[in-house]
View 1 (cartoon, rainbow, N blue to C red):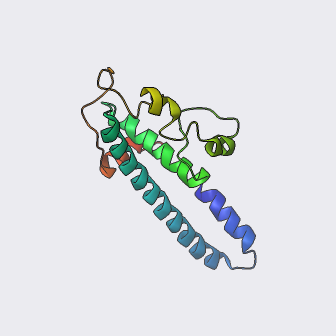
View 2 (cartoon, rainbow, N blue to C red):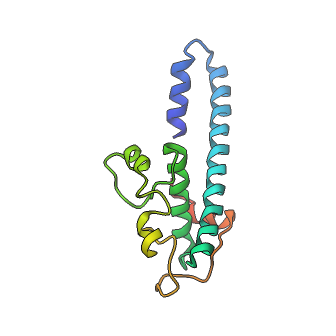
Length: 146
């Protein structure tokens, strides 16, 4: 993602010197990282609140929870909605606008069925005991994913 932001900057500012371009790219990438961190924190808090409200639990393997929360945050940044990251879509923008697969998706809201294993009922073999996850656990769980 940073590469495409860099290319967009270079295309928009062709007359700038290489040093000035590098400085601006670092600034733009820093802003992007801040936005991504904010979205990750927003989706972390949402996930905790929804787990508590729905009486569900996170996976015993917190890296599963971390990767799903990261995917939701990325979709929120890219599409403006937390589209389920565990499904394939021919047209993500259309799916996000339609809303059926935006988290919590309709199957989760209606039947407590979470395809992503983010929200698990206590009788699920993979359900842990936690309804919370720290940013440190998320960062540890997603290390090496990109």
